[in-house]
Length: 362
Image (tube, rainbow, N blue to C red; front, side, top):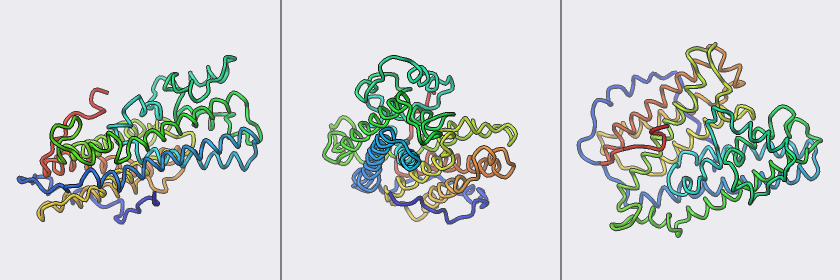
């Protein structure tokens, strides 16, 4: 995928510019593209799934090379490829429907949040034990806490982790890391295949029709898309960001964020919001003239939210600074505003009601 979209509007722009239009919901449905599912699939979902698959394969190859002959160069390659996988994951994480939610794929890739420290405990037990180390096939049948990115990040970046000692490759740590990378690559292959236009799910998404089990018309496809956007924004704000912020800079808890060990906490948030922006744009929704503010509002707020995480200073120091904390507080408000526009105005404008989402009841 291309480089992240650069927001064109300054972060300090007041949110009040969207306050007045929020009082004027649409009364007549706008026009959904007749090929909405195909647009979303071809312009965003398929390329994003392919990138995830390609990046996981590259990570698997980099880990195999490092564990075979550890060196500073191979260690650096593993770090680069891990960041590429986190980036690719951030672009598909919010697509919480269809193939990603089947066979526990989501949890197998990213078992997070993990408030009880299950990942750390189970990884330590496996690596520090003496039992047989599972291969890719065996790992796929074990606890999801052992299978995905949180486990791999811990193996790579913990104290005395694989990347902290470039010239060494502890056998058990390497074995587990290689199995995780292989597991991620296998899941990536499944996602890329099941999001093809000629797959069973892909056909129903691209060509909804009366009598079909999943989608009967483009409005139901739009409902899925808007729900994914809404849930993605809710997750970014209430699950990823707010527990980190605390009430003040002194109360911030930067280590509650995903990917803090690898230094990718801020960038993964930026990538995820950029993915939401791109997914929304891929729909090419046709608004009435008096509804254009909705389109501009969603785009503008997503760009501003992404800018809040762009080039963020060192994660822990930045969050504990007054300016860094203020910056992410504003990003939290912008994420909420974007979700409100989608839930209360965009979706109804197209005759869609956003019901329960994947986070309800969490």
